[in-house]
Amino acid sequence: MSNSNWSAESWKEKPVLQDVVYENKEHLNKVLKKLECLPPMVTPTEIEDLRTQLKEAALGKRFLLQGGDCAELFDYCSQSPIESKLKVLLQMSLVLIWGARTPVVRIARMAGQYAKPRSKPTEMHEGKEIPSYRGDNVNGFDPEDRQPDPDRLLSAYFHSAATLNYVRAILDSGFADLHKPQAWNLDHVRSGDTRKEYQAIVDRLTEAMDFMHTIGADSVPSLSHVNLFTSHEGLLLDYESSLTRQIASPATGEKKWYNTGAHFLWIGDRTRQPDGGHVEYMKGIENPVGVKVGPSTNPDDLPIILDAINPSKEVGKVTLITRYGAGNVEKLLPAHIEAVRKSGHTPVWVCDPMHGNTKSAIGGIKTRHFADIMEELTSCFKVHQSVGSKLNGVHFELTGDSVTECVGGSMDLKPSDLSSNYQTHCDPRLNYEQSLDVAFLIAQYYEE
Ligand code: PEP
Ligand code: MN
Image 1 (cartoon, rainbow, N blue to C red):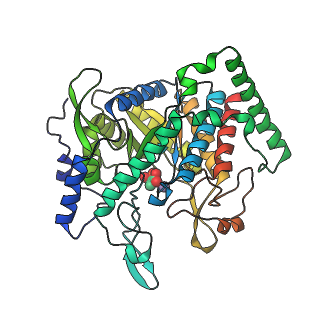
Image 2: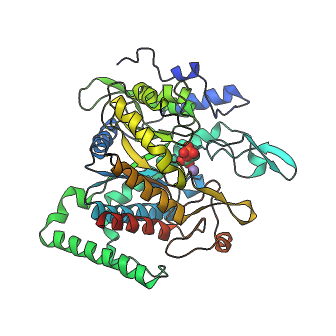
Image 3: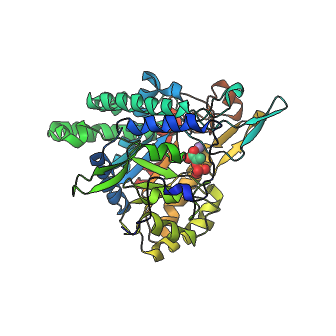
């Protein structure tokens, strides 16, 4: 590797944006020492498996579905929220497999998605300036609890491990089997025509699955056992490097560096500077890496970032997650695709139709409109196709519960409905019904 100067801590030599400043450094170091001794949550074999699947995605032979909360809370580490999130991800992936006629690789924003970058380090609360909420592994949402506390990093590890433990347990116990499409309830779909269209998809899916069952094809491991990988934004580099271990690669036996806290990590829109600490950290790990790409991404920076993280130009090692805002896709995406094509890299191209479409609603709360989300997605499909490229996946902020955070969808949520069950501490998420809507609409797009 050309990274001879890289170490799990070489990022410290670079500027680190969105850094968290702890008052008690001794306390922080004690916590990091403890984290360094805790066992890996994920293994090199799993990480390499995801890398292979993402290679297939980059080549258009697989479709990536990545989704979960904007900010996972420690409180979501509980049976019901975990089950409902898995259920929605599995149901969506089934619709997508059927629609796109390709296997799906599923990555949850889960079991570690605790740290948040913020546009401002402080906010006003009752006339006082207080530190912004930075995610459960940094400080508390309660305005009285905004001082960064190193012990929260340890809590993050244990909540991640407990979440992942339950995810693994239920997937191994046939949870995927429990969610047969014929049992899906489409009562929320207000328009009769739309409900009929969705029902037609469900009927054909059911038929396809019945057929597989009849011929015994559903006993193959890929159907009875679903794979689900974990991911989070690799924002807190102290935490990430304490979970970075040198382990023998399953393929060659050669020792390599793996981040053992999640299968997949991504760099956010605010921390992807080519010469910054986050890019430096990602250079040395074997895990597949995502990079958010937004309106402020200079096309010239993309080859630099890709060469830095993936000097051997391995297909699918990097996932580029574009998040422009519905009206900006046609303007910005072609130049980004062109810059990447010229660089000789083959990334996984993913559309995040959430982060460029945040709006403020009644009472100053944040919302997103379902129509904007669909417009960004549709534009991404079209622009890729028009320049001979291909959209390889989608990235959503979603939850399996019936929250009211985004406007629209087949249940036709109005801005005045938002206050009825607005839960998020960070960005607005698609609820269960809206998430299924998106999957159905993507399936329909493939049909046309
Ligand atoms: C996020 O994914 O929650 C996020 C902060 O996204 P971005 O970095 O694209 O703004
Ligand atoms: Mn977000």
